[in-house]
Picture 1 (cartoon, helix red, strand yellow):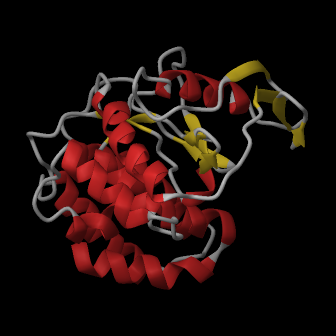
Picture 2: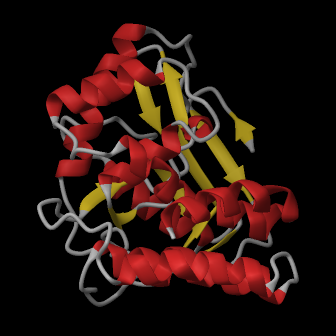
Length: 257
């Protein structure tokens, strides 16, 4: 990664196909009028992505309130269906350094999408690598079964335009407020982004969540579902970094299966 006066450049000469292009498509898709600002794409190629340089600043309560309100606008811009890739992209994407499946055709409901495209691909990879065993796989499969049955579906909540990897490191506190970077953007559930915000800690988190809830009241029980939405990022960490994340993921799976 290279920082210049007016731009920030990420380079990877061995980048897999579409690695930077889908990120650029995601940034552009998330650039919703009135939504959370994103790092503007200046240039993209198969080996690099150049975005505007943003001057960092300390997190403030005022910026957190604005972030929460603007995130509602981003989410409410909507998506054609759960799992849809960002406009301008018609294949799978990436989260971190590994693949992220997209749904090119509509799926029935969020639970079906989440079970089959956000949990099972990483469960298979972890099992095949020997990171989880058959008993642990069965625990996760119980969650997938309940998801497919619609246990956690909320028919009133339509597919949202989500960042998809909204941990604190991808929330850039700048001099003019929060900007989003490094998305794994797709059509998803608003609670997924909110759950991810707190997974590794975010400054001013409660103010962000309160402002969000005031602008778009969240469905009852959303805090109790936070762990369900964190299963996907935890499983990606299991695949990328190994077994140290398995106990936390298993504990959450027991709660929802």
